[in-house]
Amino acid sequence: MDASAMVKFYAREPGSLSVQRMIEGEAGRVVISAITGPEVISALCRKGRTGELDAHAVEDLATRFHEDYLARFIRARVTDPVIARAIDLIREHPLRANDAVQLATALTLPQPNTGTPFFPLVFVSADERLNEAARRSGLQVHPPQDQP
Image (cartoon, rainbow, N blue to C red):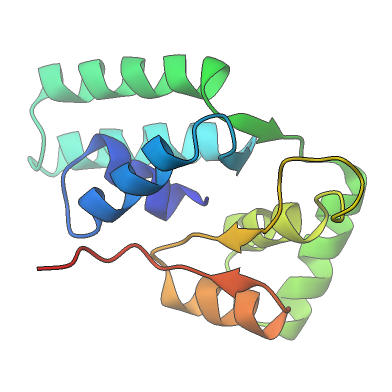
């Protein structure tokens, strides 16, 4: 799950209900890149600066996310192979650097049949450009969308 989707778990916006269901239904199986930490905190602070959230809400949500980041989610490290893959992805697709790292993280997770809990792997992002790159890279994609 990338940061654009993860922030929906903490700040109510379109897609929040979908992300809530995914996270609660996959307890202990949501994998995020280590860079998701600063990305989500940045998004929450940006919502505070634009007035979408008040300062108290930003602090509460940032604290809750940080606690979850450390204890609830599986954090995948940003390793040299992830960075190398991200560079290749940027050359292949119109991606921002952090988005390429998010996708590279998913693409470099251990493969099925290695005893890992990561499969079936579903890439979750609210960013359509990133989702298209993920699809073209062979991943199943699930953009967070709430049903009416």
